Each structure stands twice: as C-alpha cells, then as structure tokens.
Amino acid sequence: MNQCPVADPKLCHRRNVVYQIRCTKCNRIYIGSTIRQLHTRVKEHLQSDQSSVKRHLAECHSTSIAVEVLAHDSDEKNLRLREAILIMDGKPEMNAKEEEKVLLSLVRPVK
Ligand SMILES: [Zn+2]
Ligand SMILES: [Zn+2]
Image (tube, rainbow, N blue to C red):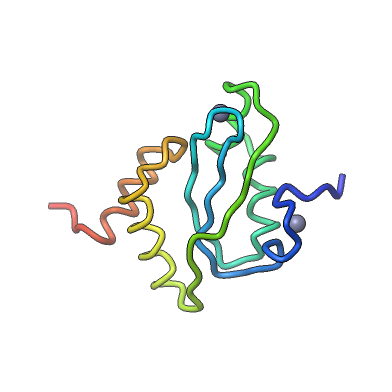
C-alpha cells in the first residue's frame, strides 16, 4: 500500500520539478511537472484512469517504471516553461497530444 513508485527516497520529496516517467518494458517516456511532492504526483499517475501513464502500462502489460528528475525551478511559470521545452525536445510518446498542444502554446503561441 505504501509502496513508493519513485524508488529513490531522495527524489520522492522533491517539489517543483519536471520529471520523466519511463516504462521499463518498452522505454517509452512521459514528461510532466509538479509543484507538489514528486511521490504524490507519480502515485496519481499510477492510480488515475485519466492518466496516460496508467493507460500505457495497461496496454503494454508493464508494471514497472523508472522516474527521473529532469529540471527544477522554484518559480511555477518557469517550471511550466521548462516542461514545455523538454516536451518539445524529447517528444515523449506517452504524453497525450492535447496536453502537449496546450504546453507548446506557452513556447510557440498558436495562431
Ligand atoms: Zn516515494
Ligand atoms: Zn511500455
């Protein structure tokens, strides 16, 4: 029940981070950001039916993820910008396309 999906206690308690979740079976990735504790956010990804991470793991028949912190920023606006840039560069396969469009509009205004 209390099992930690992040696996690294040093990362667990970090806030204001851009993180990457990788499916260790197929190596597809998801990139997101949170101002809350990483532990809490990753758990949500695994529990919520709305989460593209949970859906992917079900489709992929995978149960294992690897979590990494890609960036840190104490300012929330900067954090979202960093996330958008990392998504633009990394093109994470697991991210929902709609969600991606909203983020990219932060960096590249939609006409
Ligand atoms: Zn944890
Ligand atoms: Zn997978």
